[in-house]
Each structure stands twice: as C-alpha cells, then as structure tokens.
Image 1 (cartoon, rainbow, N blue to C red):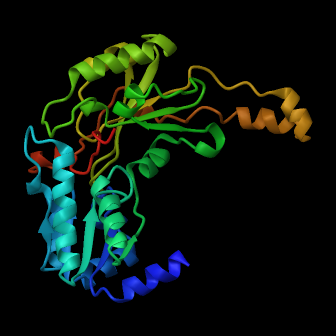
Image 2 (tube, rainbow, N blue to C red):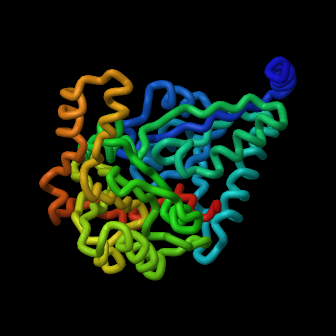
Length: 312
C-alpha cells in the first residue's frame, strides 16, 4: 500500500532526481547508464575532485554546475551539505529532470546524495541512485584483498574512535578519511591530533611496530595508486592527503574453530586451503614506494570534496 501511494504521489510531481557516481579514475569508470542520465538531464549538478572530470561533465551537459563553491574553510561541513541538498531540491521542485554526479560511488561517504533522495521521495518526487566504482572497489583490486577469503572491516576513522567500534585484529581493518579525524569543518590541513589518537588506539591492540598501508586509488590512467607501508607509531608523521585510506594488516591469521568445522561437515582440507589465502597479497609497491596521485597542473585536486566525516 505505501508503494502504491508513493507511486501515485510521484506521478503528480513533474521534477525528478538521479544521483550518480563518476567513479575514481576520470571518466573511464563511468557506466553507460550513468553517462546517459548525465547527458539527458535538464539540470546537472556535480561534486568531483579533478578539473578533467569537471570539464568532461560540462561537455556532456551545458547546464552543469559545480557544488564545490558551497564549501568554505572553517565552515561546518554539515552546513555545507545542507546547502547542497537545498540547491539540488530547488531544481527538482522547479520541475527539472535533475542529475547530481558525485565522485566515486554516490552512496559512499556522500551525505548530500542520500539526504536529497530521502527528502525528494518524501515530497513525492521520483528519486533514484545509480551505483558507481568506489575507492573500496579500487582498494580490493590494487591490494589483492578479497573480503570473501579474509573478511574485511571498514569504518570511517572518526566514527571508529568516537563509538569505540569493536574489531577483530585477525581480519584486515580499513579506516577511511584518516587525515580529517575529528574535524567538523572544511580544513586544508591534516588532523595531527586525530592521527596521534588513532595511532595510540591501534597500538594498544596491534603494537606500535605493526605494519599498515596508506592507500590512495589512482585517479589518472598514467599514475599508479599510492600504496605505502607505515608503522602504526609513525602514522602521525606520515604524509597523507584528503583521500588517504589506512589498511591495517591482520596481526596473525585467524584460527578455524575445528569443532564448528566438524559440526558443519566441512572437510579439513577446505580449511587448510582457505588459510593459504587468508592474508592480503600486498603488492611490492606497498613497501615504501609512492606513485604520483595527481596530474601535473592540478594541485587543487588533492582535496577530496565528497568526504563526510562529521555525521556522527
């Protein structure tokens, strides 16, 4: 019944909303469906991290409008996100076929996308989100981490600390937005205090010498991803950007519960084979090498514009 009422209400509204993702590496990771929606929209809004993608979007749709100017140094992020949502909905309410394109996956660390869809649907407008390639997808490919073989724990770094999230030190731990821990406003400097607190928190479980990997997905075809090894105690001094992610490697392989194996009727040989691939196959480049993460001539592209560390 609620679905029927929503459909009837939506039919009375002329505006619509599509929230899409541009992927991580320029326009090469944009799906055909997403490109079609971008082209056909009567109004295109976007929030991406590089000038090449900005230019490409403007070529696809001459109504393109950048949402990044709504940010301001020292301005609360949640205020910026609210203004973005209202800007999006203003066009939807005016009867436009609106498309909003966000960097990466539009549903991952993109508060304005989710909120705009929620409010649009509540007001009776048709609102749809299309999936895109996220930094996590790139991470799995670049670091050889298979969550089906090893499991995977994933947390936004501030949330991880504030809510004392429980985690298993025998499973890879992925922490997002480590450079802006505790920052509720848009800043250009890393949060050193936040990194010190995180390092202390992790060292209490893993030890200060335990190895982690600083990861940044490649945003340009000519540049490799960043995969740099770092000891936990050295994290506060490590060079990070707004898109840096921390991958804490397992302290040791997980031990199978053989009583449960027997109870489930699983052959012992299966457990042995699975344990052989229980550790991520971290590439050699993670042993201290760093590839460039931005293209020459675009220093502003180091700033991630779709992060959402403040929604606690």
